[in-house]
Image 1 (cartoon, rainbow, N blue to C red):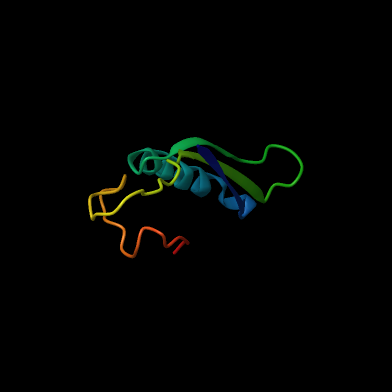
Image 2: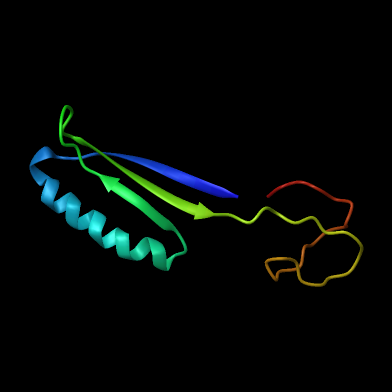
Length: 89
């Protein structure tokens, strides 16, 4: 499953170069953390104080345990509680 995070920034129009450096720095960090930087978008026309970013990521769906035991789950951590207990935390 893929998700996309949309971020809206309100920037100082006179600090566009500083925001471009900020975006460039995150462009190197996001891939190291497992995300996909789709792009940062600075205004060219119209409103000049709004910038945007799109960051994508692939998320594995949760797995459901069947049976008893304390073996590892998909993430490698055992699930506590009885197998019939469901819910989120």
